[in-house]
Amino acid sequence: MSNKFSFRGIIPPLVTPLLPDFTLDVFSLEKILNHIIEGGVHGVFILGTTGESPSLSQKIKIQLIRETCRIVDDRIPVLVGITDCALGDSLELAEMATNYGANAVVAAPPFYMNISQTDLELYFRDLANRCELPLMLYTIPSHAKTPISIETAKSLSKHPNIVGLKDSTGNMDYMNSLSEVFADHPDFGLLIGPEERLLDSMKVGFQGGVSGGANVYPQIYVKCFEYFEDGDLDKAQEFQNMILELSAELYSHVDHPSSYLKGLKECMKLSHLSGGILSPPQRPFSDDEKLTFHKKFDKIKAKIQKLLEE
Image 1 (cartoon, rainbow, N blue to C red):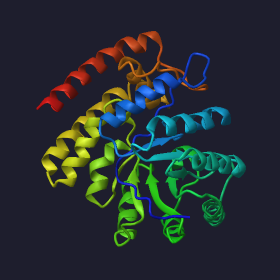
Image 2 (tube, rainbow, N blue to C red; image 1 turned 180 degrees about the vertical axis):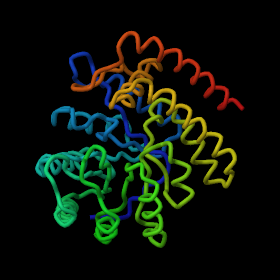
Image 3 (tube, helix red, strand yellow; image 1 turned 45 degrees about the vertical axis):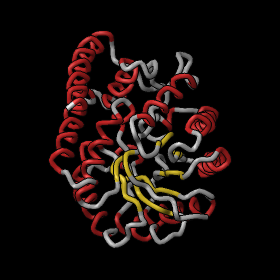
């Protein structure tokens, strides 16, 4: 086992492009991966929430791991989500990630049964012991129900094969507590999920973000990260402001629990990167919703182009 893998920069949680019959769209997958790599991202995370992992069959997940590793061809690190309610299925995905050449695996708590923090810690230790690749923890209580407490994260960080944590709580207090606990442990990577907090998180010591919008506009997020790294906080804030506007306009287009995914996949379609098909039970915008969304998209696209040209 190795704990030498480091997480840093912008690592998009890749959307999973699908064909009308809900099978994997390998052509679009290659297009998306090349697009984000050309945009300067520092890694890619497949089979996360943005990738609709819980809605995909094990067969498609394994195909996605294989094809992603083939297409990326060691140009950037590949992180593979292995979250599942069944330990055996998580371990199978971890084995496939190892066999096909991924660099790390990522796991959130199993999302159906009620779990105590004690049992959760034992679960993650068992998973880490049985994974050949480094394991990153992923806390997203809005979807996985069970949070990873600060105390549990601190205890698990001592495991030699648990190398970081992705925070998708959206909770500023939790984010700040993580940064304080791990301030003297830079080898334990901290990444932020909600892109609206990208710059705030880096200011308190996080090493980067798993930003969904980087599927479409990777340069915006990479520029924010790079300007922050260079110490130019004014320019970093300028790109963070664009990220906030993108989020407000395109991810909240409709009053719906899956508005973010609907908006992001429609952005992919309008950017000619994929067909924009969501995996059931998710559904795309209605025709009327698409009409108004397209106007917002065109406006945001023009603003982003102008910002990148300045």
